[in-house]
Amino acid sequence: MKINAGDVAVSELTDRIFVGGGGEAYGLAQEMLLKYTNRHGLIAGATGTGKTVTLQILAEELSAAGVPVFMSDVKGDLSGLAVAGSEDFKLHEAFTSRAAKIGFDDYTYDSFPVTFWDLFGKSGHPIRTTVAEMGPLLLSRLLELSEAQEGILNIAFRISDEQGLPLLDLADLQAMLVWVGQHGKELSLRYGNVSASSVGTIQRRLLVLENQGGANLFGEPALELADMMTHAPDGRGQINILAADSLMAAPKLYATFLIWLLSELFEELPEVGDPDKPKLVLFFDEAHLLFDGAPKPMIDKVEQVARLIRSKGVGVFFVTQNPDDIPEDILGQLGNRVQHALRAFTARDRKQLLHAAETYRDNPDFDTAQAIREVGVGEAVTSMLERKGIPGVVQRTLIRPPSSQLGPITAAERRAVIAGSPVVGKYETKLDRQSAFEMLSKRADDAAKAAEVSERAEEEADLALREYKAGRRYTGARVERSTSRKTRKDASWGAAIGNVVLKELKGTTGRRIVRGILGGFFKGR
Image (cartoon, rainbow, N blue to C red; front, side, top):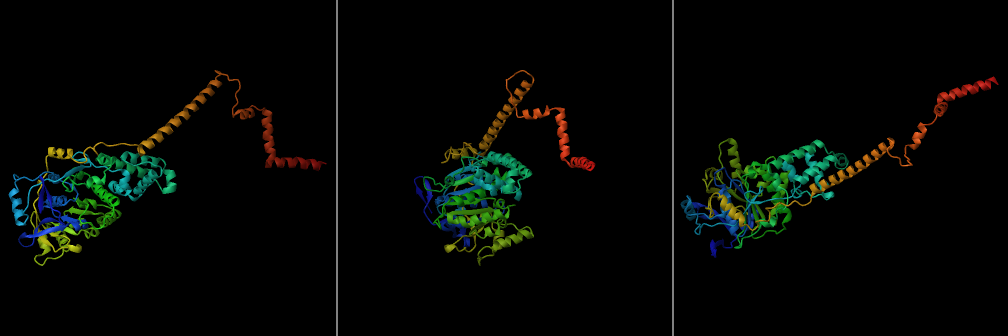
């Protein structure tokens, strides 16, 4: 239920959010308890079945309840949250009719507080993190490195820590890898084999990432998580929308960023136990990208974070076409579910549909598998956690209509929202403080200057020697280390012969000759 505070409509403080109408004639309110929103959720369904609208109305309801939201917008449609819906919209009558059918009596149009973000800095405020914060595990996943190459990346991170060389952007990491390659033999004795070819492979992957725009993700100022967990002056939660339409061209970068964000929240936020409502709710669209081709250690990490992050007051909703896109161990942790229609055109599709139906608490009034196949656009099979975290009985639910604009806003409207953002001007200018690249460059410059000075001194000494030999300059007294050797070379020819004879006499042949002479001498006597 809504009340008016001045000119702004806000939700009355309740312990639940309204999703739609279920049961007979869709008159039974389907609600999600705020207390269990941090038990995570799943929004699934085939393309064109209404997942985006479900995302939109959940963001509206959570924001109205004072809960900040983060969501990725892969098509640009979610930008409409920043603008109120209109009675001139072609679906106005359909929306009002649906609202009346499900008992949404105070349905009105409204806009919501939105902050736009963009890894490329074009359609929103730039989002950055440092290479050090990303860490070698996520970077290895992003670059698709082998185990040996990942090991070299770990060595680079270790050396940067030990020698105080901050890794902030890609230039820092590239310079660090050059240093590792140059000192490979020394490092191999301590850390294991450092192959120059493996270092080269990592450098090539970094170049590809840089060409794809990945360099925009790394640097400073880095994102402060607190800026995503703010509230509007009227108490509504800020809705953070990541522009991901262009980002879909680099799916690994998109997936790595989402996993990094989840990990950072887990590491940075304090334990809060089971709050009355979450501190933040994340919606990860195209969730299958998080797991496609991911190594088992990565999936295990996501599973661990998903299991434990609820105690930090964070809820995570995975949005995908089919529940089978989510690993089983993670799927089992998603308590709140909105399942839009699945199409069963093949035997594999039918098997997946039956598997999805088996995860719900049965409703004796209908067959769940058949309902999943038959629900129309804007309708879904839902199951929300009830008191004590028990899964609710599955219901066929008509999703409530959105209060904000359905569809994308104009470029001018987006610019206006960005200009009025609470973080405007904070992240737009990239900083470049002294880090590994600058420090290693200075080392190289110092070494080059020292080598140049040494080489110049040696050249001057050689020039002085040549001038002396040419008789151009006489210093009076000149003593060199080679003086004694030159004296030996100038010794008489007789002395040299004597030395040879003496050496021969000391040898075996010499001793035989001496014995022969002396033997003859004594024999003669």
